Length: 59
Length: 327
Image (tube, rainbow over all chains, first blue to last red; front, side, top):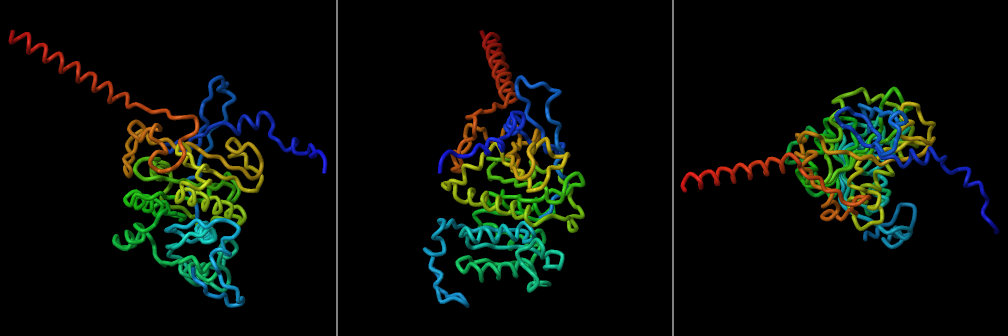
């Protein structure tokens, strides 16, 4: 027994990854894109680009 | 509980033993599409305890199917729906699974309705946008929740890298499938789509959790469902392709719940639209789902309010004009 090892901390997200993980996205069904919600204080140039949802799916 | 004995064991399948490790959740589910996703969804729902299950699929099991389907070589050439229902009845005798070798869109209205009306939840797991839309319409007509699991087919990403689960509630409490999938193409060559079983099964497992949450709003799993985020995207256990890394910033397994807004114009199917859809203020009050995170944010139909004010002012003006004329 004893203290837990510190290796878990290495598996944590970076600050930038954690910030991006918290970002809200929405599906724009008109364009078929996943788009990030704008957050106050965000630099528009640092906004992630929309991701095109696949036009096709399979079962 | 049926006390039938298994062929190889003398131990009776008593209910308290079968669900000794987790409580049974039951309910009736219609699964349209018994392929790579729908097949595993059906099997998982049987494990959770759902019964009866009705499976609808027009296809037979082909050799190239067996690497990613619950059925295997002994069932080659058999209809997927009936063969899988038989397998489920054999493996899980408490599940009354029924297979229908049929195209859901080609069923006579009465037959389709008889399948839909008894179901607590509908699952549309087909590769046909037309069939997904038909299930959506049926769910809305019957007032049932529906789940639409699928795997993305796109040249920008690896096979089965991204799974998609849309879920809907009737009565414009959430956007319907049509609201969320207006951009979907009607047909594609998805028959040949590749995809790894491990990633497809992840989607099936997650879909079964969504079905359970919809059928049992009191279940802890219902906390996963937030009516403002009715699309769930799953990234499989594979390196993230550049085309989707903005949504999935970390490598490997991850999921993201995505907001699906009502459309800016009335949806041709559910009639929901951005300005008169059920407000977030009423979210969760009539369906047992928890209220959306971040609190209620009712949206007012600004145009309608302005029109009403303008009308009132006009009426008052006409009345005062009439009164001054009479006096």
